[in-house]
Length: 639
Image 1 (tube, one colour):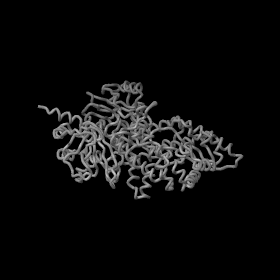
Image 2 (cartoon, rainbow, N blue to C red):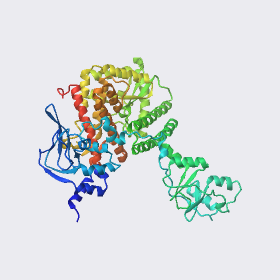
Image 3 (cartoon, rainbow, N blue to C red):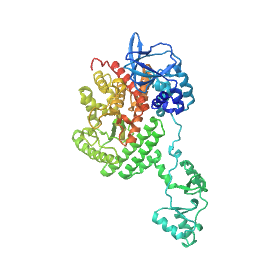
Image 4 (cartoon, helix red, strand yellow):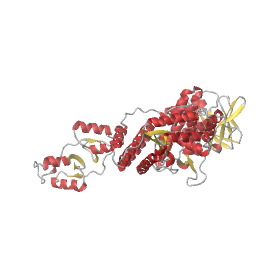
């Protein structure tokens, strides 16, 4: 007789991690031992310092808060809801409970015996002990050193891949292969190749490949008079052919072609000539695949002579990005490569536009990339934010010089838009006279923002203080960077206002750990990942970098890593912020590639429970950082 209660419990368990990694028979084995607890609101499940239970818990319905008492003050550190598990970490660590768990409302809990669960979990290679601990962890900092490689392992684990990652990919082959029979005449073969506009044809017998004829064979063996067009194709075909199975890698294909001095390989069902032909791969196909290799793309960018060329290359950069994300290459590595390719694209556009101006720039200048590209964080194609700084000139020459650079900027902005970097809706682009200034004008502008500071000035400073040179004279941008540090040093009023701005986005979680979504507009009920998760980290990183006068680091994750190095007392928090930022940026990139957009707005319905749990851990770090900012800059009295 079936145990219907156990089956219903198993069906519920398999919806959530880590149980979704277990087999049905294992789930049933666990479910049969589960006891069900019905608790009223306000009931204690276990208290801080209590001895361990023999069970951990999963919430079937309701919500549970976890709190910790320090110096006689109890503080809620987390809230769990349906599908969450808690009380597991202490059982693995064999430590008394470090927190108190209390029901926030009426609850139905599944009480799961550790004695049943632990042996099954430890035998499952897909469920690492520390991964389990991370999913159920009650730690206040899931991104601490001991957890960082466990919780977001796909983000931070270094994979020792060679530089040419494409070589390890399976080769893409032509599935619709044009074939002919051995009795075919050379004339028939030549006509078929001409009509199909192909350079080779496979000769098959009983669906097995026995030979290949290429356009080279027609030139060398027929056009020279050695053979006539009326002869059988077997007289000029190359035989036997080399065959491989479907999982052939690009590296294997390249080595084989080089070794045997051939340009084609046949793909058959079992990898031998004695099975059905299923595909064909040529050295030309491999060359096209190689186009997504970063070094090849960089060379192509430098050699490009048209905007159309750069647009095609930019599309291949997106393919490369998708490959890196799919292969779980560390985001630090991915960001640096995509930044360099984007930067080289911008530089090439500027070079070509200067050539089209038909006159050299009147004075030295620098093209500054702002925002995400300025921070080396632009992975997906978003809008362009840029500006120009040019060498100081006499007052009477200023407008004439500016006119040249505005004309240049208009050309550059237009071509960047064609490539795929959309125009900025706020017109934060170099073609706008507001953002095409001399060095002294920029200095005066920056000084004004830090002395007469309102909301508009804070917003502009937040955008324009993160800049990176993409083309031109680095001495100009270096001097501008030094000026930013000098006018913000010990400028407590400006830094406080910058701090208040950094806290303008509330915690991404609302009541009972629910995501705060947009309440109206085009993206109603969507979660704004940029505004509610990434920007609080970006703004806080900038604020702290200016406060501690950190030079030449604009990247958010790198800023927090530098802060961790400089201030060991807050090392764990700063590293947590770095890890959280990279995880969130990778999450945005993944969803942007899936939805073919900038990944900013996330539809909660398509997110898995595991994704939501990981994001909530990141949000917990954001909340800790915001509390730190309030205390560090004494903002409680100003908000």
